[in-house]
Amino acid sequence: MAKRPLTPRECELVVSSLYVMELIPFEGIMERLESITLRDIIGPVAAGEMSREQAADALDQYIKVRRRRFRNVPPEHLWSLDDRMEQEALRMIRKRAPLTAGEKLQPKAIPFEMGDTVEMTVTEVQERNGKVNVIGKVGQVTAKLPVANRQAVKSSKTMSAWITGIEKKPALIHLSTSDYGKHQPSADVKEAYVTAIASLREYFETMTVPSTEEVDLAKSLFQRMIRRDQNDWFTVYVAMGRPQLDHVRRWVKVIQMLGKSLRGDEEATRMLASQEDRFFKDALLRACRAAEKNFSNPM
Image (cartoon, rainbow, N blue to C red; front, side, top):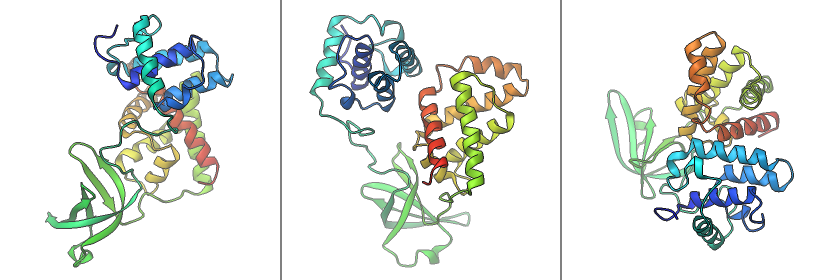
């Protein structure tokens, strides 16, 4: 039995493994999973698009990458759990109401997403080193909006802007009134993006070696989501399915290793081989597929 109650995600993992082992039916399970990755693993099994052996490998990858979250279910014990733990997980999942894909069990501490347009109540204007920032509140959350000068604020008590970044600790929303980041690339540029992203995906799926130019372009697409320094950074972020930025930071490091490895850096090649279970590959592949689809079709 678990040393402590199973967490909601541990319950989802256990139930998914039971389905893969054909110990429970599919009905009533899929629509109660919060994890999009677990849905992506067991959904294709039910549809006959993935074998149970492939799903088992995907679950092994999933738990290894996130092993710190699964103290009750270490990777080496996933397929040999005791009956009490399995029953505990089943009870917890069956008690849930169905969830739509992407819906969270718990409400977010900051109920906004990047790209949302919000109204900020102005509380003060700060001017330091020639830079002017408007500080205010969006609901109960502190917000920060850079402006060109104090004249841009005038006597405004509220300002409309869109969210360009969210910090959780301490809670802070970054805002902008310009459209920088929302530029739509030309068809030729989108085609280049798709080629680079597809080559990167194929490398992580089948070890097909991409060109250094493709890797460099793919890396730049991920980097701009972190740096927000290109006029289409938000367009790329949306096209990739709004990935978690903590994940994106890891992906950038791995892609940098790949680029160095392709240029003959033996140390980078060695380090790249050790990253297999450390960089949320399942989420990276999902982001790549989303970008290929969205840049190939009008967004």
